[in-house]
Length: 238
Image 1 (cartoon, rainbow, N blue to C red):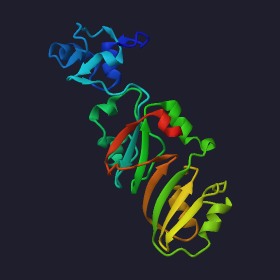
Image 2: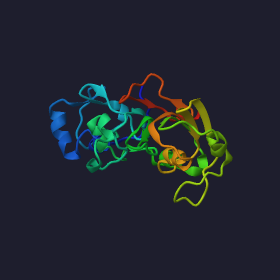
Image 3: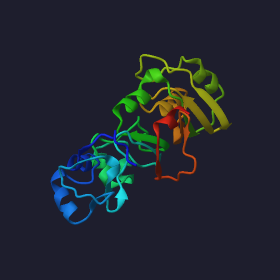
Image 4: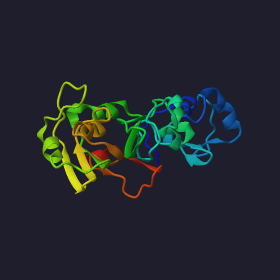
């Protein structure tokens, strides 16, 4: 039994907001049987419907606004909406998702050469909350360095006194875990521009490979590079 309290909107507005088509195309799609009602009720483009009443090519609609995507970002992709910057992380998603309104955007960014856990959402409030410096969401990066550690990096990063070039405030304390002399993990609670790379540059080293393995309590689990899964908001606080 459907929830009678579910809000109803015009069919053409609903499908347009989810990126399936522009509103003027709905009549033709109805005529061709692409868009149907779960109970086979008659539909017109201006029929008021609930999200869960509509099928597109026989399948339930994509999630409504508030979608959260956890992606395993490959190196070489850009966290931008500008096609001029190269291949985008959004190219890994269904093409209609790029037409959704509200727009799907990344929660923070990984630079082009960094791989790993990336979150995307069309929830503006969630995006702001998870990127706001005051929330101090922990993130763990696996880094491969150009040359061996010199020995004092763990103490420096943990001190909360490290200054990055061009910054007015020092980095908050960060936890460095040494795997071997050129491979480490670094846990930070900020999201400054190219922060991990710049932290190692500040102590005379260079990051040659970087991968984000966790964001808050989230991990990639079994996701392969280029794959993604939908998660719910509760997953962010478990």
